[in-house]
Length: 467
Image 1: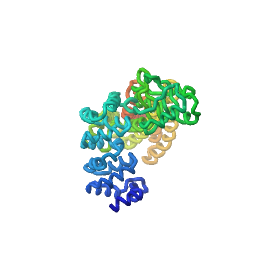
Image 2: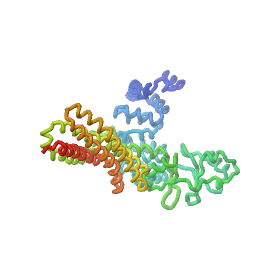
Image 3: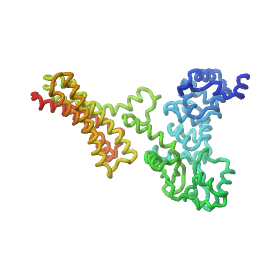
Image 4: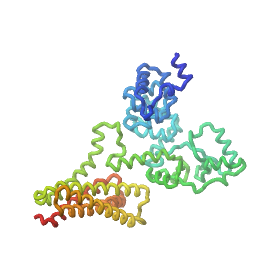
């Protein structure tokens, strides 16, 4: 009882800080929460979750043992914010939802905004989804089912269906009074939307414009009819590009008949797309999580590793063509990987820039030739610089004067090839409607390995007359 009184008088997180100076969760905090869970101390746990932001609550859940996660949700009951589960890896989220009773999940879903509710439900299979949806009021169930029916990476799947609409004929004063008197407004919004009786889009009024205007001013004078909007079927990658290009915080979502059906906000699109692109560059599936089992991760990465193995054999076959030369001069075998490695690193730099430019639509038909020529010149300039450095090092190492010239010319050839491969291969894959972020790395590496080995050993064969 004394402890509960202290909690009421002083912030719990002030007494027991969750994070240390380095920003990491303190082990002592996790141990205290674990002890409270084991002791079924529901009042203490409710006080904790009431003070935590959803992101911090998600971090706390991730730090707990698997058995304690579900019990924390059950003990905190209605005080638990189910949006915190969206902060977890998908695998962890699934484990928790499958252990909870459908009635508990349904009550938690009802407290969420529609976009958060959809994100929570989409990780479950259809049978589990139905069990939860059956326990929701018909209007809420219908709205969530419509969102879940949209394609996985579409704006319709990520939009929230809570927004504010007003008739075009209202005044500023009427709109403000309506928002003050309506109890169920969205938790956060940035503009209101004008629609006709059939919900057809007519325009938007930003809140800053609305609040700077006098009450008698007609909304029709403030409406932005050219407001950027999104179609429900638009891919999230396109939506993220639109947000970045026009500095949007939120955008209305319309259906095929131009009816307003939702709003999508910047947090719904940017983080997911960035994460997907970063994983794709490494040949990792976008749904891989840190909490996945070993077999799941290994299976997901296997395909691209298999492709990479095949291309590695191709590159190694080039060495087989010069087997006799390698036997006669050991220095060639020692230095050949250096040429290939330098070309690979240069190609990766170019490829990273190219993939990003393709994703943001900064690289296209209008500027492709200029960009390709620029990257070629960058490869040539760096090639000459590293040819001098590597050539001097090779002569000093092996004491063979001609070796410096041979490796220098090979370095120039491979850095130029790497620059060209790093930009042309992503552009070709984009033209073929393949994802350049996923596929480029393997093929670019093959190009630099093959060109590096062939140019170095070929030039050496011609220069030294090795036969």
